[in-house]
Amino acid sequence: MNMIIPFSPPFIDDEVVEEVLHTLYSKWITTGPKVAALEQEIVKLTSCASAICVNSWTSGAILMLKWFGIKEGDEVIVPAYTYSATALCVLHCGATPVMIDVDEDFCISVEAIRKAITSKTKAIIAVDIAGWPCDYDALNALINEPEIAALFNATSVKQGLLNRILMISDAAHSLGSRYGGEAAAKRSDVTIFSFHAVKNITTAEGGCICLNLPEQFDITAESRYLKMYTLNGQTKDAFSKAQGSGWRYDILFQGLKINMPDICAAVGLAQIRKYETELLPLRKQIALLYSERFKQHDWAILPPLMDEKRESSYHLYPLRIKNITEAQRDLIIDDIVITGVSVNVHFIPMPMLTYFKSLGYQMKDYPIAYHQYACEISLPIYPQLTAEEIAYVISSVISAVEKQLDVVTESSTSNTVVNV
Image (tube, helix red, strand yellow):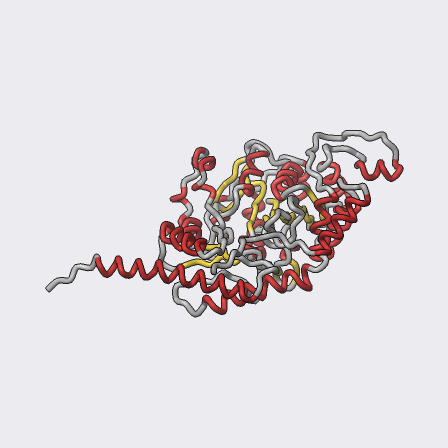
């Protein structure tokens, strides 16, 4: 009998339920003490200077681009191999996403960035695919090179204060990843996490901005400003008013309404308290077991998980299959799904999507991104998986891949012409 193994269900245990019930019984469900507690836990986990929770990664990215003064006529460099939100946040600000190719490890190409930088470049959004951190040492060295820094043209107060390209980490996948012995989140000016339902830590929907701005910025003041920005530019939030600070408020600027409510924060708060001691180690254990089994097969390209400088957050396990086409990959997925195992693909490169094609992006300009996509299959990886289920996933994948490779071999043999 087939097992039914979902791709990425949220981790909901009794402690999550109790935390949510505590919020409901408290009668305070919008932004308040639970959000503040979650932000404190994120600062503790990452050692970042400040954390500001929002209602999604996308809204957090839009907020930070607007905070930096990015507007029409500006350019933001993004990888073609990512989820669409990485570019959509740029478009929402009226700016132009400059898409570039990636390297073989899924991460944005530093050399491609170098070629793409112009006097219009205001920011780079580097994406930690599957939880694997980008090469932040190389990225930061690049934006600080004298000839690159000289190209920077500040057109806002924040840009003038930074006086170089803003480095943003799209860390939607990489909460808990490590770089050079510390949280990878420390390696960018701004790191933005996602707490969507399928992420390592979830708040159902949500995200968090972490600040690591250089010393010329007043982090406390910037955090306070960003908090107001998430509440329409309002000087006083509802919780403060409820605690007796008075009803009168002011609107200081045109903000957004993107705050995270306590009812959502409660889910993530219960999870993050056991993240480093329980949830993340279980993900790592599964990833290492997958690699141990799949490395025995010549057709497997294992994802990067750990090297002398970096360690993944084990958000995804993006297995790649050597020497197959996109169509063959799709047939492999069909056969895996028939066994009851749900798998996915991360990601469809943006230039393949209708909207981005309509803007003039062409997939032929990003050959490595296409190659990575065409042979990639994301496998289930989450703490609730049992040893029996993990073994079943491995068996299902091996069987489906080798079935397809046998078909390819038979087809190739039957089409061979023998000369006598």
